[in-house]
Image 1 (tube, rainbow, N blue to C red):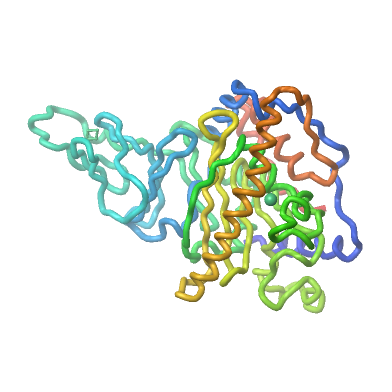
Image 2 (cartoon, rainbow, N blue to C red; image 1 turned 120 degrees about the vertical axis):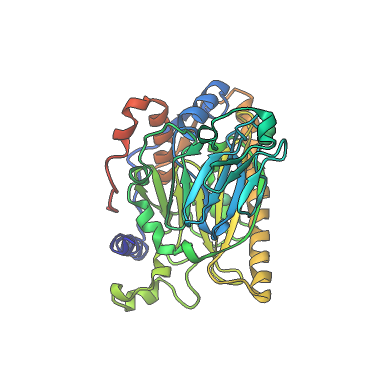
Length: 404
Ligand code: FES
Ligand SMILES: [Fe+2]
């Protein structure tokens, strides 16, 4: 864990909170409105971003034990995540090598996957271990007919995969040191609580809302935002950005606030106090902490939908501590509120924004100097669309940019 950088960011937020200042981007950014509506660009984004970049597909908490698996769809690709006997996570194309149907559905624990069509059997390591009625079927080389593997990395209690079996991109360098900060959560030992999926507007319209505190006291005035300031500090690490308030109002461990931190030497600051704010992981994840019931995080995982005007967000709720009857109720209420907030306030607004932009009469939208997170995000989206496979590696060679 990179505790020194976590402390540095907290000190920076403290200093800004005290001085009543924030860091502003150099200029207002003007973005062509058709980036949210152009089908052709949407196809390129899916291909050059979602099929080329590592995606955080599941927290460790969703498949903590050997034999646990999770089948899911990501940008039209059926994916199977498994944890082997050796404790290692693997990612595969969830497609039987006989004639292609999915070999697993949902989540569960198993020692092998038996295809539901004709009964071919694969082990958790993806190897084909059984061909039904083998003598009748005829000769095939089972060694060549394992499930197709994707590059995968489990780090900081989160699991990334690249949906391109031939990718040589180094997932670690893509993470740009950000994983060492995320380690501050200790997600390896957190518990999966619940998940659900919501429909929203274009994936970038939806994602913009996770990178901006500007809207909190306005759009969320009826739920949680009324007294929340609209200022944010942005800490980019490669394409990933952490968003923090330069103030004392975001969730902190019970009984602790920034003022308390000032009384202590930074070496004594509890790591939990260094993890607040919103952690976005490019291109499609946001992690935010809540204290309903007990400490929890909501991981929002966004995927482009079937057309440019649609996205789907899976909200995955994790609890730091094991679940009890009592904590379940608190976590449930917190998660329910977040469903309402995102579905009705954020995505309700986003869908109306989408309708208006789809009308095709808006030329530009704007990201203010106070919306640096959105500026960095859109800069990276464009950069990736402009970068060939050959030049991709160089993009992430540079490691973290320290907080200024
Ligand atoms: S498609 Fe899987 S066994 Fe036939
Ligand atoms: Fe919001």
